[in-house]
Length: 390
Ligand code: EPU
Image (cartoon, rainbow, N blue to C red):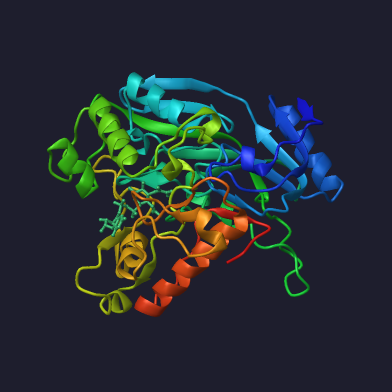
């Protein structure tokens, strides 16, 4: 275990590159070290922030008055593989996500290829049920082993118990706000009650991808939605699409080190709003409308897509932002102008160098308020906000 005396600022641990110092910083390289650190912080009533690659975090300029813990373990283990059951794969929480995707494409494990290039760790993946280009990690998870901070013991959740939905899970839902007089039972913040130790995945075998479920990806590949394509080609196409949107990992630990400030972001800053179908009917005809699907596959043998819920519609936060007058590169005039929307995609809030957390919050508020005024839809932030709120 490495306990640093030289505590890095959260700006050095997050892809947005904003955030002040932490009180303490620990790197855990074994499960025992991870659990011991969590236990010690909880026993001492010290706030705890478990970070992966820092790609979904916005931390205040005051920093974090507690322990920042990074799980630096690596490890992908194939437990079983046969043509009937597919591959059962065990991965530790600290493992880099994209390295897992590379391993799965090489090994012919189907179902992660469209999740190429997502910055972050395997441990963070089930917490917000990462998804992109028509796939979600929920479709590949069999169970998740966690450390339960309340009961002080290991607890394993089968996939059906994880409450996985669009960018959410039971794990994430335990991470409510700091305790207040009104809600004293909500102490698990900014780290959930259950900290992921490892994730077990179950994947089909094959050289072809799962059916392509995203129009933009299908056109890039020159296939129809619902077709399969060689996994390696799907990975390459997704990486190209992500790069074109500035949403590709750049540098060690996913922290942007280069000068492309479009990559100094936390990816999508808002989730795509899911609204009742009648409310979606009131949006302009050109606003994108996507089906809302369950996070579990419809069948175990057919296309890996969940059942559509006809009462709900998902629309596009990026489109609403763009059409509410906040185009690519938009910034609030004045002192907060070091934070702007990405010049490649309106859903990423970016740090143009020297932005503070307050600048990002000022921009996020302007965008959220403008979209609410224009379309009556309230955007919800996707990153975990630490010490700041909109
Ligand atoms: N659009 C604009 N202006 C822009 C960009 C996009 O109007 O500057 C509109 C277009 O109409 C476009 C639509 O927004 O068709 C959707 O854009 P895109 O296909 O890029 O996807 P998204 O909905 O913005 C979501 C995820 C991404 C994921 C992509 C691809 C969320 C919050 N975001 O973005 O995930 O990579 O789909 O599947 O669900 C992330 O979560 O951090 C993330 C990057």
